[in-house]
Image (tube, rainbow, N blue to C red; front, side, top):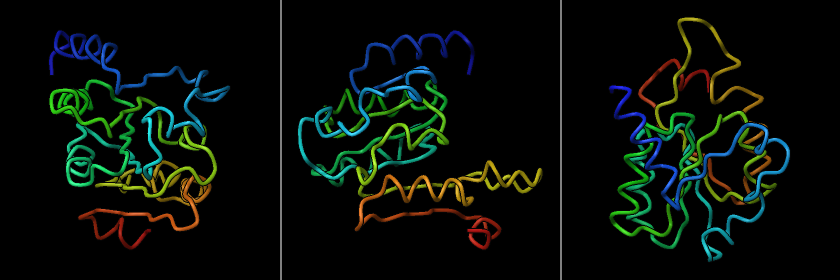
Length: 168
């Protein structure tokens, strides 16, 4: 993708009401929506999070299928999830939001027990570099997910990597 398209998408993301792009400092000091996601969506529907949402296709598909759940896609690349954010606006999907931040900050984005379900779709297993600390299913990440999931919370892992399945 050319930088011109990227800049255009960044600009559009700023105008979308369903996109939140906090600075790292805003996230770690006092993220405005932590513990208040039901207010953001203006309902008490369950919160479902897709980590590493990419273009947001899965987030959008789940939101279409389950209008009585709220979906939040998280990815560090805003130009990537722009497509999902734009689709949600075009289709008037009020149960979709996207947050541009690092996944390791997830416990600063959500309060304890605030999330009903987490989806990790096709995580990068980091096999080549043996960078286990960056794997989305390493112990430190799983502790963060456990903290934000409610008692009946569900963790979904979708992968075609035998290595990742075994590691997890």
